[in-house]
Structure formats: C-alpha cells, structure tokens
Length: 426
Image: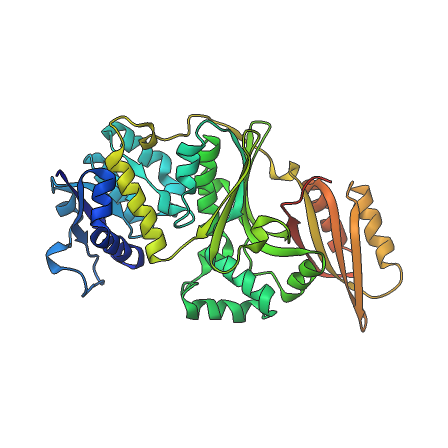
C-alpha cells in the first residue's frame, strides 16, 4: 500500500488531536483513501515541549519537513500570520499539499497562497478554519457548486455564543460570564479576537469568498463585538420574543456583496435561536434550494482535528487537476454599501423623565424616514429608559436619526442599537 507522510506544524490543542486521529483511525483512513496515511514529522517550536509525543517524530526546522520526500501533506496549526504565511508559502512552493485551520491567514492572505498553489499544482485546504467540525466549506465548494447561494449567516464563534447563551439563561453580567467561560476553557486567556468579532469576521471573509466566488478579505468585513451587550438588552430581547446572538452575515444583493459581523436580535422561533453553548450553526439561503442549516461543535481538539483529517483525505483522494484545489474566486464583485442596507433595529435610550421627550424624538425619526414598530418606557427618579423597535429602514437613515437624537439635551449618553435578523418579511 502506498504511504503518504504528513508533516505537522504545531502540536497544541488541535495538532495533538490530529496526531491522535491519524493513529487511532488509521484503518478507517486507509479504507477511505486506499493508502497508508501516517504522521511522519512534527515541527516543535521553541518554547514548546510535548512529552507525550514520540521524540523520533520531532524536528526543530521546517526545512526538514519540506525536504522529506515521503511527506506529501503539510498541516499548519501554529496559528498567527507571519510565520504561518512563510511556512505555508514554502510548503506549497516545494509541491507539498497544505491543510490549515488558520482563519486569519486565509482571510488576509488567501489569494496569495492560492496563486502559489496554482503555480505548483499543490492543494490548499482549509475546512477547519471555519466552524470546527461543521463541513460548511465543503458544502459551499462542492455540494452546492451548482447552486447560487444568496445569503450566508449564522453563529461562527463558540466563545461569544456561550457568553450570550449563559447571560440569557442566568441573567449574569457579561464580565462574570466571560470569566466562567475562561474557567471552562470556552474562552482564551485573552479573548479579544473572539469577543470583538474579529475571529468571526475572518471566517465570514472566507465563507463569503467561497459562497459568492468573489474575494472578500478581513479588511472588507466591519465587525462589532458583544462587549457592549448588557443584561438589560437581553431582558428586552426576551420580552419581545428574541434572543441575542453574535452573527456573521454575508448577503449577495444585486450582484454586489455585503459582509459584516454584529450582535443581532434573532426571533425565538428561528433555528439559530436554539443554538446554545459553544456550538456553531451556519444558515445558507438560495433561490435554488431555499434554506439549509449546518450545525455542530465549532471548536475543540477532536472536532477541529476531524475537519483537518477530512481535508487530508480529500487531498489524497482527489484526482490530479481536481477543481477543489483551485481558488474559486473567479468573479470580481463590488461591495454593497453598508449605509444602503435595509435593517430593523432595537434602540435603547436613557432620557430625562419629563413631559415632551417623545415629542422631541419621534419627529426626528419621521423626518429621516424611520418608523417605530413598538415602544416601551420605564422611569426611575428623573431618568427614564426608552426602548424602540424600528421598522426596516436604510441604515443611513437610522444612523442619521440617532445622531440627531443623541444630540438632544434630554438624551443621556449614546443610544444602544442592535440589528434584528432572521425575520420573515412583513
């Protein structure tokens, strides 16, 4: 049986999971591929040591992996951008197939790496970069290749989904829930990329590029995080029949692309509303197949490693010249302006509790072409909280309204705004 060596760059949480699956599932992988796929070498970076790793597999120079003729596949799991870009570029130039889980690298430098892969005839696979064990990239690149996807949106970050779910379930404040998430291993010691939305933005850049066949990079995706969400916002969401989720949203509108990440109110009867804990779910919509939702664990050692193994199997079993090794961004679509997007909004204001306040606020909304769907007000001492749900309107109009409203003497602080997603047209 032909042997296919795997060179592994990084042996952390996911890397060790890949090593475990290559060993424990060797017979299944051989049945799937007709070849013996084995772990040949592991690059151990300075400062890292793995006592459970066979010392005979460890190398300290990536050149030893690239020069090994038995190693046909390089799996990059070191994270970061600079060193990973150098290593992946060198591997592809050497004719090695590359499998990676590095979302930031693909979102920022995917075009360059695909060009190198095309020149060398090597494969570049990255299923594990988005949504862990959920095969959303395979679905978009292969299963739905003949179906035009119009919308990709969903929960693509497990940390923020755990935090939002726990805040909703327990009523606990953000800081307390985040600390618990760190204790349970659902959040990193430095969770900035997750809670700011940057992690989700990189994933949405990748999914948009594949789904719409037009390049989207991280720089093209504005993102908002969850740090400003309060228990009051969650309580209001519940009272109106919603839950709050951090969503990645990519839409194809009039042959133009709009991709963003933001917290949103999602109706409780929408499939995404029931996705709890650290799970992910991606919702795909098309005029050809209506709607599909892919759901599962979005992170973790074995779930993410299983996506890496799936890519390894895909490389081994794909015929020479197979399309899935190529960049699928064969279009060059313009971006749809964010200001022209039409959205519904939840707005929370702190105002002076005195007669005439509503008489100052509602005319501004009307002048900008924004109408109110529902309104709720609660007073305490000389301050009142005013909550509005707005009908769908151009975001430029909503922004202009709130800038004018925030400047009123009766308004205290900046308004809180959260979009509403997932509602059927009224």
